[in-house]
Image 1 (cartoon, rainbow over the protein chains, first blue to last red):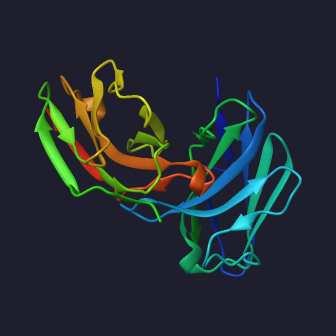
Image 2 (image 1 turned 30 degrees about the vertical axis):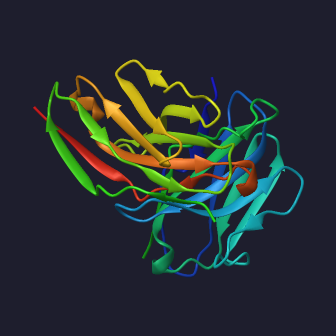
Image 3 (image 1 turned 120 degrees about the horizontal axis):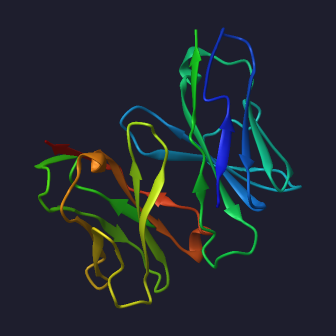
Length: 118
Length: 115
């Protein structure tokens, strides 16, 4: 149980285009989903926290107009990288916290999406 | 603000040996949670072990155990009888109500198990 999927697993796009990454909780409902960015050989950097039906909360330094997050249902959150540029190339990971399961919002992680912007 | 420090960027041991990864953290809270996550080359983040701060007993999961020293704010991970499949990045993480249960991550330790 507690499986999180991400799609696509990798994407290559041209500079200036927009890319949408989907994060789905397959066997549970998630009140909260998190989006992370990970640079090579580095730790995870939290970009934003999204709750179903409300606006995402972005971390300091993350451009909300550049990284659009939509959490439209209890099983789906999307991250859209708008007008992507080569510096946006990175590994993006989502995680989801099951609804009412634990006192500490246990996170289950997706397999990640590698974005390469040419 | 809470911080998590992993002072070992990389470690390597022979297969079947025991290895200990270090983690220290800083917080003023009394109730919190500590985690060790494994990220193998596939880059899928996998929870290895979890410790609740209010529990004095160290958590164990098969070959994985922790040494939780609350007063010293230390949370090390011991891997016994290491296997080739243990080769991965290992991240220590902290979570508490004060941070809305967001995970605060350490920088990671790259562990290489040699055959």
